Length: 130
Image 1 (cartoon, rainbow, N blue to C red):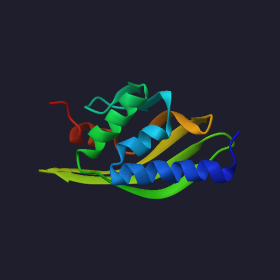
Image 2: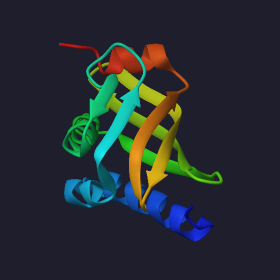
Image 3: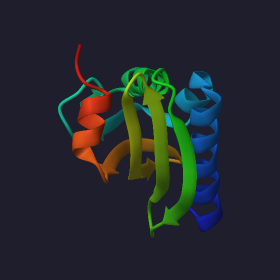
């Protein structure tokens, strides 16, 4: 079990690395078998399996110019979640969604990420498959 402080620090490090687009820092926070699951039917939805795939997912999401505004860090007994407000604009498309990024922790690292969204149709439109 992780202390409140270590879970809080890990969440802050993840958010900071994402906003800086520091892919190596994100990789260091992940277990080798980490996964990230996003809902929807678009370029970023579905599971990313393995740390390299999770980093590639983060890179792809950030490549759309997202602003990842941290609203809250939520701590459970064993894990941590980030409450975010993501915004971006691409041509006539606008992304404005609230989400929870829930991180399962193991051995001081993130072993799984699951994202919950407020506007799935908006996300599908913004990240539509080519």
